[in-house]
Length: 138
Image (cartoon, rainbow, N blue to C red; front, side, top):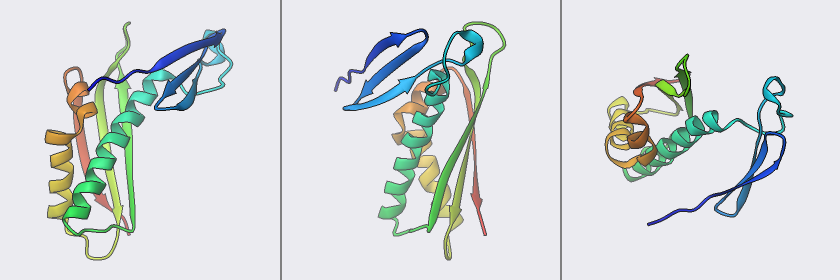
């Protein structure tokens, strides 16, 4: 399977990325010549990871008959100091709310996503330490 993304320059530091028929504006902040008209590319890497693992976890939990009332993946990353700057540490916080949530099933779903199904995680593991935690919110 092959994917294709087109990234068209719009002037200054702005680009439009066409992904699956959707357009995502990209830009830099004013300090480096941008107009702050869209997200930066590196944080979108974290969003891709959160979306990938989040979709896996939801799918796996449905098969386990676990239905949270709320689910959120908060992703933080630490960049290296030197160029090329990249995320060398990434932390995933899986947040759940619901009645009678089984921590073992939540942990299994997260583990399966991270170890078997999430291709974004697999790619990023090659250059970053990825840690995670599961939190059941009140």
